[in-house]
Image (cartoon, rainbow, N blue to C red; front, side, top):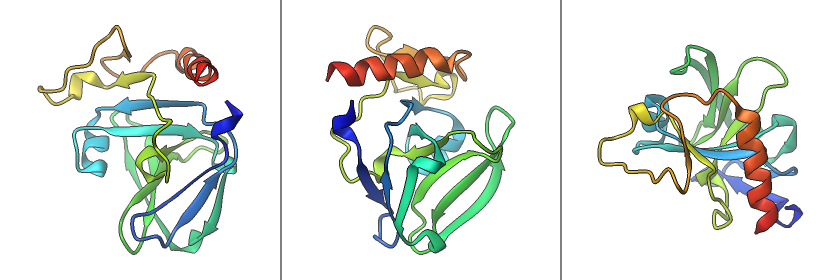
Length: 158
């Protein structure tokens, strides 16, 4: 598991650079409307980490934030590059809660393999997810601890 850390990433224009200094707690694919809009695609990939484990190497002062409500009704703070608009992370406004680093902002994405697909009731109709390969949830999963455990086990096997 330690072989993947640290990982670096940044925004599309290169103004913001960061390093993950701890193993993320999980990675999942989210099909909610917010993730579809923020990614300008059919889904988003969320790599869950503590914001304390994200070290900004350059451009932290270029992060712009705004708040919205997610499909679950909770306030979500979104952080993106003020120059190119690339989303870097989003998460709860409550302290000590993990944030979702946008997995595509990593320099190396080859090691990423999500453990689940969530909000499948909002997925585009052409998306077909094999439930034998991924855990599938119509909405938000009730037990994120189980997904975190599966993620850690998956990383340990690689």
